[in-house]
Length: 378
Image (tube, helix red, strand yellow):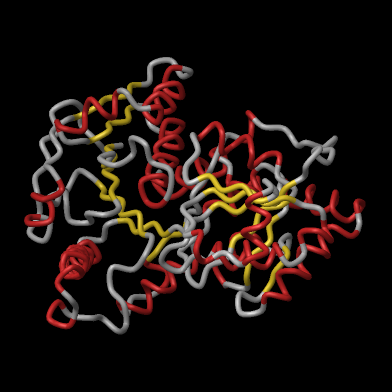
């Protein structure tokens, strides 16, 4: 398998993070894994923790190979050429599959190789805005979207494998491109090896138990809504709040500002991966609020560690969490306050929710993802 790994060094969120996670899965099912990067990104990749994660998986399996191929064109060339096909020099191994996400037209068609297009957010929307209709600073985004759209249509014609991050995303693509839903395969992103984790059945409340929210205030995500809602009930439930993401402090309510000043609210713009995993495992519950997502990686991560999830009513979140989560309305602050209170009322029920969350989390293990990828590809 060849993977477009241009952005995985330092990847914390989004498409680059899923590419890294998929690469960890591919180490389990392929004999040879090739990471394709530009020559300018090669050193950055080789010195990254993400590369070490992949290398450690390969090292545990005899006779498997990990190759770094620095022959990928820079993004600017791909922007210009992906719509007509770009020949990526592939001198190290003869691949059976090629994987990419952001540049669906980066590989020239080959009869002997199957292209895998990992899809996240739609390249095309039903209310497409043209380049003449947007201000100058947004024209680059519109051009990129239109190039991706054109390249994606070509991949549909070539019968490439389309693998969506959720059924919700698959349905969006089906609708936007007027293609049958079964044209798209669905494999959820996985977040860790279940064999390396055990259920914290003896979980005990921390000296200062806390809720966790992993998201920045941007696009459709709304952690400020979470913060200000929690602040209204922080004294009643006696739960701190930790937020990992960039938050404009001027949007916080007076109550939130006061709790930030005394340390009951803690905001970390960025954390190292091992630091984030630690606070995810120890959280009383994880809260996510957004008006639109293609998946919801922080939800999957929390469930994987057996941490209860609270989220607003969004169809993709319900797909990810099934019936084990607690829901609220993003337009009703009181509903989030009540959701938090409900989770705090009964220790017995809370422990049962933790157990159900852990069971649901199996769906986001690398082992389960490897099984699904193997079934699809072979």
